[in-house]
Image 1 (cartoon, rainbow, N blue to C red):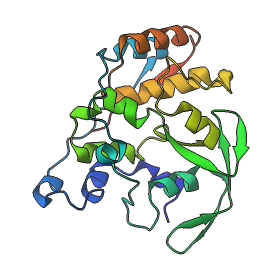
Image 2 (cartoon, rainbow, N blue to C red):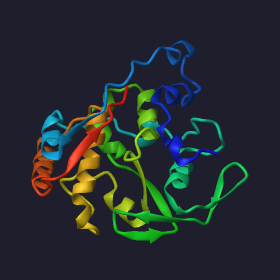
Image 3 (spheres, rainbow, N blue to C red):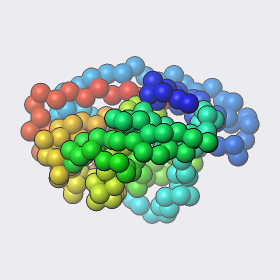
Length: 225
């Protein structure tokens, strides 16, 4: 069973394990090392993201990003791994990673919850719009299941996750816990930069407005190879 420390599973290993249908030669290709992490003031980080028009043509969530995978083959898929790592009170685990009970803190709405969803900090549809449509499917499956950065996938209340859906910061930014606006924006910016995703002009303008509220907030970016 994986502990919280194992959420840093390298993306190279995910690439090999995530899609058993991938051609062996492709799976064996060397993956370039990630660039070093770096830290910027939030305003500077926002201005670093490339700007481009969004395009959702051809988007189909399951076809584009697949399902949860069990990258380390311990019986627990990505969703279960996040739940185990982020539990305030750990759930019981039986069989092939069947979870029962447990308690989680949903910082999106400042609630402790027993039923959670796993949110992609930058939603899958938003990632598609922002450049992921040009990736290979294997890369998109890696994105959907990425455990190398704790900010990427978050256990939150079902209410907040479903209200957020695929919205970007122009229309949704933790409305039930506004004290976390800086936190939320910095995490979104970190993920966009780590994966070299873009923002559209309206999204950039919203990010800039919110960043102005957060003069003491820095963003550490962990580029993904």
